Amino acid sequence: MKVSRLPIDPGPAAWADLLPPAAAAQRLEGRHTADWLVIGGGFAGLAALARLKQLHPADKIILLEASRIADGPAGRNSGFMIDLPHDLASEDYGGALNEDRRQIAANRAAIAFARQMAEEFELPCEAFNPCGKFNAAASAKGHRHNQDYARHLTRMGEPWEMYDAAQMAELTGTGYYQSGLFTPGTVMLQPAMYIRGIARGLASHHALIFENSPVTALDHNGDWSATTPSGQVTAPRVILAVNGHANSFGLYPQQLIHVFTYASMTRALTAQEVKTLGGARNWGATPADPLGTTVRRISGMGGDRIIIRNRATFDPSMQVSERRIRAVSRSHDASFSARFPALRHVSMQYRWGGRLCLSRNNVAAFGEVMPGLYSACCQNGLGTAKGTLHGMLAADLASGHDSPLLQQVQEQAAPRRLPPPPLAWLGANALMKWGEWTAGAEL
Image 1: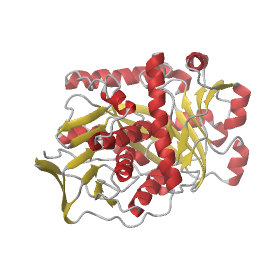
Image 2 (image 1 turned 120 degrees about the vertical axis):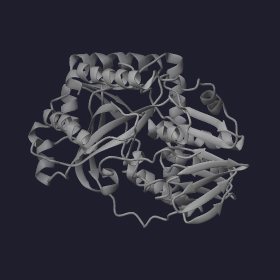
Image 3 (image 1 turned 45 degrees about the vertical axis):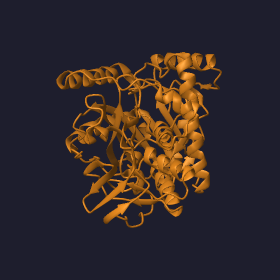
């Protein structure tokens, strides 16, 4: 199969820019054979690689990444590894009780696997910080969403704490929020630091990771052969961990929804600006309305900064223009100024877009799609936890290593087909526009 298009990520990889320069990339050159091939060096691909190293320590395993580790979507998310239900299509993230309990167990298995890797490779707390998060409500409607979600969590026996407006102001340094629902199970990542650290640790354990090595063709002639611009890898078993780019390999046609989300990051705040703002120096808040604004404040390598994320667009081409980034930036600036009026003079140093992939029925594109070819794709906007989960489970499936968790994922239906392209584009973008409009102050 010829790969129809290669990944394009708009804007800079801001999280990676905060780190010291990475070592020079090792590019695939010449012909190689391996016992296993993993395509994609994000959360799913690295989890698959780590699990394969556990199950087959003597096997030769090669991973191919189209760009640099942490420059793609894995390094462009907001860094929330969330354990609780987080359905972006719902009003308050929650769903049916039994299904939500199953999802919590699955998410926590993924977080436990990520924690194991972080500890094994001695990643700093800034890379993997199990500090919890807030659902921040900026309106009465948002507060009601938080209350509804809190009742849902109580029915599941999950801990939570509701912060009032004064407590949120003390935490965030702004009086913008009416309430905040704190849940302790989320891990906050510096996503580029985490991804680079995991990749570096796996490479030190004799995994072969090749960057700037996009797969341009994947052929099956007894074994699988992946061709890159300057090399080829032949292996009997392949794990495809490319999220929505499964479509580019000819898989799951008309079943995947390609969405871009957008973020901006301030320049480093001065010491006086930090003092003026006050509040805690590290916190993360998802919006009470799923289409509202996510905010993070970070302090560490790269200084004190604030990240704003909002707006989403459906883009089947998996490309967006710089003009789109500029247009969305106006929304980010307005959201930032509304929340932090004392810092309205602070400029945004980085603006970028990140690809994510959804399915209509909120399931993964997972399983053995052809003999020896395993898919760990379509993370439904939750790539940190779901990508880790599906990567490790794809390695289990390919290795014949069964578990109740693997059975649970395999029991899910396939991604539902989308309407014809014009209807899908019009419907998806109209739905997101409506959701953003009704989010009101949460945006």
